[in-house]
Image (cartoon, rainbow over all chains, first blue to last red; front, side, top):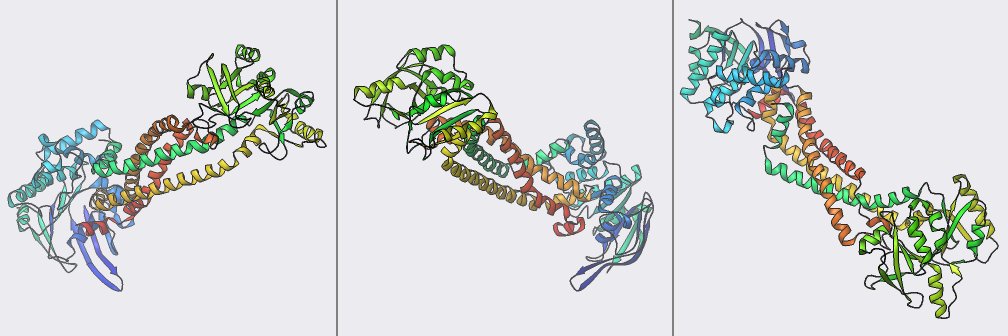
Length: 229
Length: 390
């Protein structure tokens, strides 16, 4: 499903060079729930951005769902993301002037679905995350956990193969964090999604199938997670 | 939810800011449309007479300086191609004495009025009455409406010239041209009044004539001026359009100034709208990053932001253009109509063309003000923006 072959990402800041990723090779099979962990600056988010089609490597090859992302133009990457990748961010990032349902509908504006179909798909996604009754509520009327659920619904509404989550529990209390991790695990179990999560949250280890540890841009080790059992 | 609904919601996220920016644009467009009525009035007058086969003959030195011998009228009437000719002699009478001369009032020959100004379509019955009544007055619609006169009303005009002569007229009917300010009365009436004071009037300020064939206009003007070249008063003949253009030449400078002021106003409002657009985009960088991440292309983000700026400006512009109708109505009530100094500049008529131009101006204000912030937001790299905001 996801293949990184000898991938490097170098940022140039004037005369300085920052090697965010250094010759990383990694494979993630379809339908796995994977965590990327490591200290700050280890390259976790960079790796996530590359496999999600948000960025291109300086060297190496990134293949996702049989597509080589290196060779795509900006528009092609945008289209790829719209069709194949769902995003969950740490701070929920819902549009404050849209209701929960309208936030979930947002990715569907990029499709050719009719207004009615978009509405139905959004309602279904909200039902999956257990928020059907809150569809018309604004983000300001919801708790952090509920907002993150809406964000998850938004991430899955276009039925992507891959869901990427960047610190999805970073802004949640313990109870909500566990609920969100369980929901992400369910995405894999019930819907066959491939979920890749960047996290500092050690609770995540119990939910994922495998954990890739990074340090200073290098892939340090890969260990099985509690979800593999 | 549709794209347009999404754009609309984004406009309503900071209602106060949108309202204030919209109000500024609406006010600016209202003022631009209102100001545009002034040069438009002048242009309409010149356009309305551009196809006429009317010629005006006046002294070579100018209308205000020397008058023509009255005998010239019959000679001009006898020339080939002249369908009819009428002299104008300025009376300069003030109505009710308070405001000075508020409409042009002229002594004319009643017999050829309907021929020389056939395009005015004056009612033949009114013309007949005008010929019959020595004290009759034909009044332009603008002046009739301004003073609420109707046929049969008695009107007294007091002239500062002509030895402070006051004449009383009976309104016989109107010149049915919307913005006509004229007040025409019989030359014979003035001659008799002056004769009673021992004065003999044997001149006229200018002579208007109509030509049967547009192709004869230029040759006839040359013939007239050649005819009187060796006479006591040299003539200068010109078309009606040329005459009004030169009469209002000072106003054209004023009209240009007004146009420049309106243009500067439009530029001001672009800056205000651009400032709002920039602030809005800056505040929404996080959201824009999310939209780009979930698959919105650069073009879609650019289009969305530009649509917001353009929609706000166009809606505000529509309100402003509508408001200009009220503004011009108010101006007409207070200071509109014919004025000796400002002529057609103070007709204050908001035409459909002005309204449409105002709307398009608002649209372009939105487009120009939104394009740079939208382009800047769309061009930013997704990862670069995500790193900045998260």
